[in-house]
Length: 133
Length: 133
Image 1: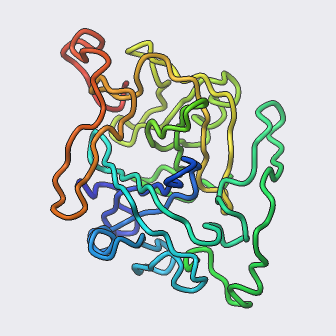
Image 2: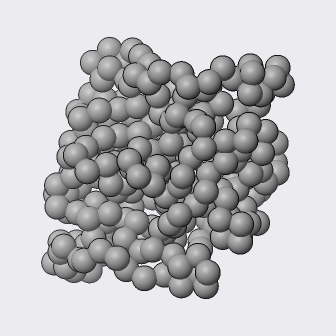
């Protein structure tokens, strides 16, 4: 892997999580070497939080883990694609995918095109950080 | 949009291109504000090259443009998902997707799982840069 994306001194690859069955794109985040290796070892998605500057397991707070079924690497080895089984929803807003809003390309207005699956307050309490989902 | 990913002083969002019909993930790259606005205006995908430090239109060398049919934004507005019609192949290696290699999660070996659609030498000549595809 080529951890070439350097943000605040941390060397990273881009990771994209995609639903194993439907191919819906669920979220994107970064991985450093440790997160990448933990993902391989545990087969549960781990990411690097650029705001909290630590490795986190997706679902560590919410229980909405991502079981990794397949992994792909891109041409220049600086991005990985995870095909996952997503428990609950991927997004800390309660949606299945973080990409739940469509942009009207003519006027830049955004509108939600997915229903909310769960109430984030119930799942995360009042201390939710988008990088600890 | 929240252009919060700062790489070499440029403020960026992550962009993911996905096949409009099959939902296959084709590639990921960054957009700065100019690339984002050009994409909206022209409905052809534009990205920011972190190596060449300039905006480029996907397909400007190869002709393999991405016609953007739909755009989605993620929860914290620092990533966009483009649903595109991909002309030819997305990858400068001649594959339809840049994620043409699968990682064996047990031994980290990579193997190509997609056939090559075109000969990159014929399309790009000898001067190919992965960020000018």
